[in-house]
Length: 472
Ligand code: NAD
Image 1 (cartoon, rainbow, N blue to C red):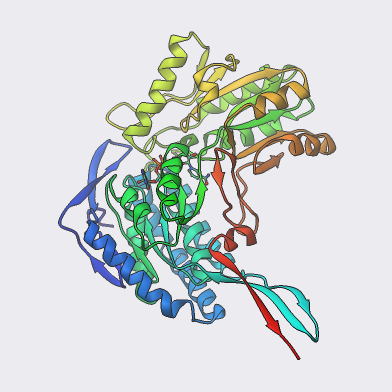
Image 2: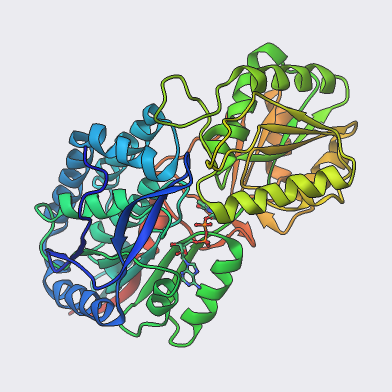
């Protein structure tokens, strides 16, 4: 595959080039390997105008036909998963096999969402009147995606928005634009022109989009800090917003667990994708009776997994995706060192220009430390001891975030009770990172606003319309 190909935006079903470009860096080497279009304001206007024109007809396309096209898009992703996954690794860093899983999963996600339909609520159906609430599409959706799961998180927006009858302008992160641009190319044969426009650009493009009066709704996934800016910008003309933001997820391990059975699951729940997952375990609370046993097992796994270029055979953990994030993670590590925290490192990392950080377990740091309070979004996991359930639940909930959490125990009733008391939108018991298209995903507190996935997520792309019909 020619990674250094000409990448184009998709506007109105056509390939669009731009006068300027942005460089795309391979995080395993720190070197630029391709260029992506840098969308101008004029081209953004064209994209919005094209989606606006397409909305007039797309909303009238029967639901079954829209669903069929979204399902077809899923097939196209699956059919191109091999090629896309190699490009994915090059720009995102994750090992090829796991990149492949993301593309396949995104394809299946499109197919599953394609089976969803909005409900109709009937409040009265009598001889005198019919009152029903149905759901209608909003218009043109502005979709903004991050770099950690660039394909999945974009398709979480594309699938429900288009099934619901909206059209969309989608912008990937400037750090990972290439797969999404390629997908735009592939989908030119799937959707009518203007239904899904895909544009890329630098740091100005997001704010231009959120301020653009042509959008009815913004669906945003990214950091909490940016989410607040998006909401502020959307407030000017009361655009609808869905914000999926950061997390600092706690996992609670009770003393009755089988350590050999859970250690690997807990490890990958924290470190998969170099820990760059909004719902990764980012604070690990372990009962004092099993603390040492779990810590030693996690460190042994960390020493055994290969950290390296995702394109190399056998790599399990790739680099941090970009320099900005690498600097943040290194700063957090440095802060932990300065505060004399005990750092337990995993396998050696490759030397050179790549953005590699050693897998690091922080041994029982005080709660007040930055490494506990902040979302690391990198492979540094604070592991803390606890003795009492009530106390650990308070500690888990003592966060501005409320995205997800996990409980590990053989006692299902006890675990269910703890789950109910955790202030997050998702809680896993004896599993983690499991998300489905038919199940609501919604961050509480500063982890989000609104819902993605499930019927609730579909309805975030629609407005209720109550119809009162007089009879007789
Ligand atoms: P980010 O906020 O820096 O960027 C996300 C997107 O917003 C990018 O496309 C970026 O170009 C764009 N953007 C930046 N500034 C903007 C502005 N002022 N207006 C509009 N758009 C703007 O986030 P990131 O670093 O790409 O992603 C990492 C963060 O995302 C982490 O905090 C992570 O927890 C969070 N995240 C959340 C979820 C979730 O579903 N809750 C999923 C994945 C990632």
